[in-house]
Length: 286
Image (cartoon, rainbow, N blue to C red; front, side, top):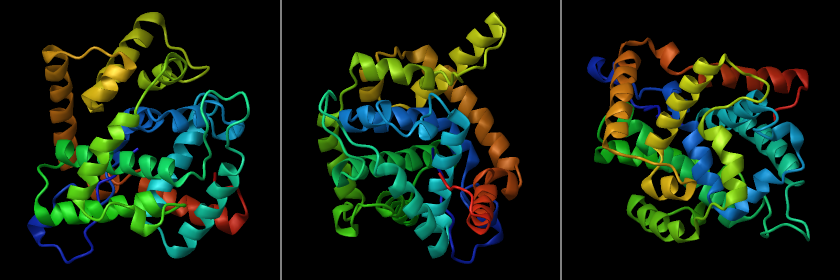
C-alpha cells in the first residue's frame, strides 16, 4: 500500500499542481501487489499465513487490516513523533505474538530485522513504481525525496538506520540480491490469490459481476508486479494485458491530476486524524 511524497519546500504555482504534493491515494491500487511482494519471502509469507493475531489477518478482517496498513504508511511518512511512538508500541505488541512454532515449515519472527528490512524495501519499491506510473519519471531531486520516504517506511520499527541501504544505488544492489531469497510455494500462493483478485471474505456479487471484478483486479495486481513475482505467483502476462493495464493507468492518472489535493491524499489525510482520535479515546491502533 503506497504513497507519493510531500515536498516540504516552498512550491511554485506550477509545482503546486503536481499530484506528488501529498500522499497519493491511487497508490492503494498497488496494495495487493505489494502484499504479494512482501509475502514472497517465505519467512514473511508463513509469518502472516500462520499468524495467531486473528484480528490482523487480511483474509479474516480485510477492512481492519487495510486500515492498519494504510495508517502505518501515513504515520511513518507524515506522522508526528507522538503518533509514531504510539503506533510503534501497538505494532510491537501484536508482532510479539508472531513467531514460528516447531511444526512451522520455515523459521520466522516478526522482530527479525532482515525480514522487516525486506518489507520496508517492498514498500519503497512500490512508492517508486506508483510515482512513475501516476506522476512521471523520477529526477535526481525527486529520487532523493522518495528515498528518504523509503527510509522512514523501512526504519520505523526494528530496522536500524545503518541497516537501510545508504543510497538508491545501494538499494538497487540490495533488491537484486534479495530476489534470490524470493519463493512462493503452493500454500502461500493459495493464500495470496484471493488477495490478488481483491476477493473479500463474505462478499459475493452476482456471478458475471464477480468474475468481471476479479478479472479487473487481477489485471491491475499483475500489472503492478515485477515479472519475478508474476512467475512465482504463476500469473500469465502478455502484450495485450500490458496494453489494457496501460489504458487503465492513463485514465486514472488523468483523473488524479485533475482532482483536488484533499481527494488525492484520501484516505491518508483522514487516517492521521483517526490516529489522534484513537490515542485520545484509548481505542486500539492496530
